[in-house]
Length: 281
Image 1 (cartoon, rainbow, N blue to C red):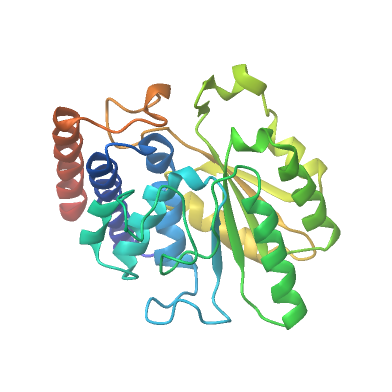
Image 2 (image 1 turned 180 degrees about the vertical axis):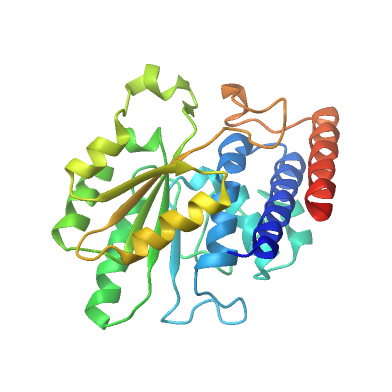
């Protein structure tokens, strides 16, 4: 990745975060915390890794992304808007009646959404099915799925891991957004999933752990995952819930709460300052 490409990713990620705040504020509801923690990796996928075409979102040989932690839809919508699947202005309609951008992704409504998700634990199974389907059809497309660290407390997740390893789905990359917090508190207190990396490896996946906000680390990890043959890959992303908005960072209360007007302006001011710094960096 060139310095210019990395700069462009950082700038885009700032804009994605602005879209997350804009959408949740206008909706007066939503999940900003886990959307902000996932913003960098989804930005990286759509702007540096995945083979997608906004002018033909349903092309058969496209790479696919499944947001298994479907409540982080504001992050996915914001990335899709920045990538050109629909107008950025549409982010203001998040969760409104008649909007294409509902509280959880709907593949029948929203251009660029590959799977309807929201019932936690199920998205990774759909992603595994997509990966197997691609192999059976002889397609070279790859499938990426993002789970929350609280979500992996669901048993179906581990059935999907076993399935993926059994069928040697080396075109599947499982991502875990390990921000350490879920709706009821710290994941280690609610139902500890640790050690996440060892458990994934025990189910037969090739596992890496990286800083989920560092584009260099992400690039290396995805390159290594793509080179792995004969088994699926998993990347555990060490992230910060609420990343980019000072008063939201590492605060469990921002899992599922929208900012009020004062909080909205503070968040947008902080993100505008971050964007300005990145643009001249």
